Length: 224
Image (cartoon, rainbow, N blue to C red; front, side, top):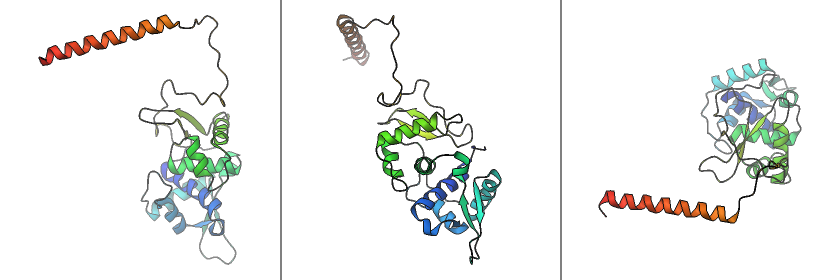
């Protein structure tokens, strides 16, 4: 099962998933409709400015990989295209909505995914989104991974694993774990002794003294 899709292929699959669930009367999409969906400014990060030949070439590649099928509708003259993500991934429509959001907008938190994916398929709560992400990450071939909270970010996020190797940086060496209410319980080693209040106070005093010495040295160097 070829999961390694380039950025244009991912945008196409995400757009097809989105349009199937939000505008089913217009689905499957013509090549022109698919181009507009890939390049739209809403619900896309980053925005892309693909040319028709780029989308057409990526569609052919996706057809060869088994991700897209060409459809011939009765009475229609224009060729239309549909995704085969259900067959490729073997997940339900709510999981497909979550994956579509990750494909279209990049790494997101469970709260963001709950809100954004619900426009396609209802996601009950952020906790429900998180449980689904954990299940997708635990598959024999994982579809997502937990990034934790990186520098400058307020909330931990998840990302898809449907891209090509090396396109995205690895997660931090010690990523923040998912919230304890939904992650397996961890147990401290039996030999780990609790830190006493005296030890904590001594450590704080040492830090304050070190800071005072640093400030004094800075004053001397500035001639204060």
